[in-house]
Image (cartoon, rainbow, N blue to C red; front, side):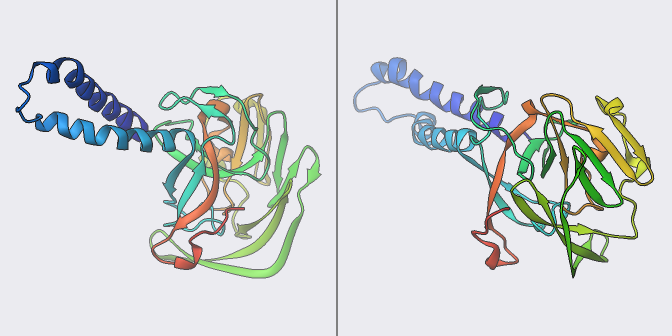
Length: 268
C-alpha cells in the first residue's frame, strides 16, 4: 500500500471540496443555511492531512520492523523513525530527488524501496558504496581489499525464528567506516545460499562460490546487508539498490510494546 499516494489523494480531494465551497458554494448559500457536512469535514481534515503529509514526506516517517534480519540492532516489533531529508529532499510518491544534501555512508541503517517490488520498504545496513568492491569470504567482510575489523567477544545471542525455531548465534562487533555495530553469525551456515541468488540487474558484477561472493557496486547504487548475516534477504540475493529507491536513514526506536527500555534508543 502506497500510503503517501493515499494521503496525497485525500489532500487533493479535501482541498478541492473546501475551495469549491469557498468560491462557488458559500456565495450561493443563504446566510442562515448550514454548511454541508461534506464541506465541514473537508475543512476540518484538510489542514491535519496537510501537516501529516508534509512531515512524513520531508522530515520523518515511522516504520515498523517486521522481521529479524537486522538483529541484534533492531528487534521484531520495533517502531522506528526515519530521517527523510538527510540524503536529500525528494518529491513524495514519485521519490524523485530535487535537492541533494548528503550521500549514504558505509554503516548507515537505511530504509529503501525493494528493487523487485517498490511498493515494499526494506531496511538494511549500507555495506558498499558506488564503485566499491565488496567481498564476503568465510563470514568476513572486505571492502576494496581491506578487511573490516570484526571483534568476537565470545558472546551469544538467542532468538526465536518463525516456526518457533530457537536460534543461538555468535554475537560479534564489526567496524564499517565510523560505525561499530553488532552482527549475528551462525558458523554452521554458509556465507551465501547459492540456490537463492536471483538473476538481478548487473549480476555480471558479482562472482559467487561456496565460500562467499565478491561484487563491484555500479554507479548510483548501494550494496545492502542485514546485521543478522545468515538470516537476511539482502543484496547478496537480489542485487543492488539504486539511489532513486532510497527512503531515508533510520535514527531512533520510538516504541516497542514488548520492551519499553528500547524507547528513545538511537540506531547505530
